[in-house]
Length: 144
Image (cartoon, rainbow, N blue to C red; front, top):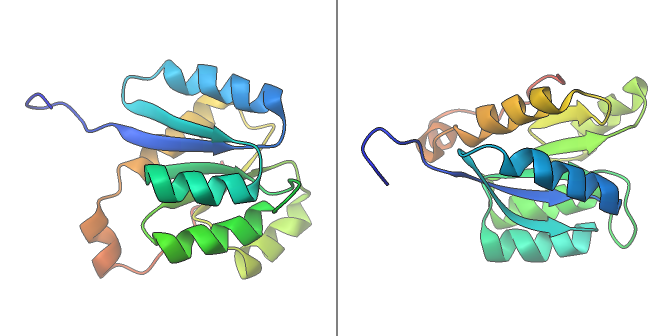
């Protein structure tokens, strides 16, 4: 890495809809600071890819076949608590409270959020330093 250059933020995208995965892939690949390390279509694949690639940030759909995002978030955090997880879903606002109580996610982002706002959230979470997590309790960032 060159002097003054920011490290890459390693991102994993998990969604059961191919068009969503493809769209996020295109959007993320436009940013030099972000490196897409994988695309998964369900929670089980997400766990396997998270264990192999050790991403900094995971954009994780909540409603998927095989294994849902909340279950996957708990298992991923057990593997690496420093992984930042963005719950990415089209669920109703009242359901967000359930996410706060049952899933281990760091932020929530509705699927109708502008792409640039999602990218900003990825960068914000990806820039958190590991030593920050050792000294500070985990926080839940508000939805954008």
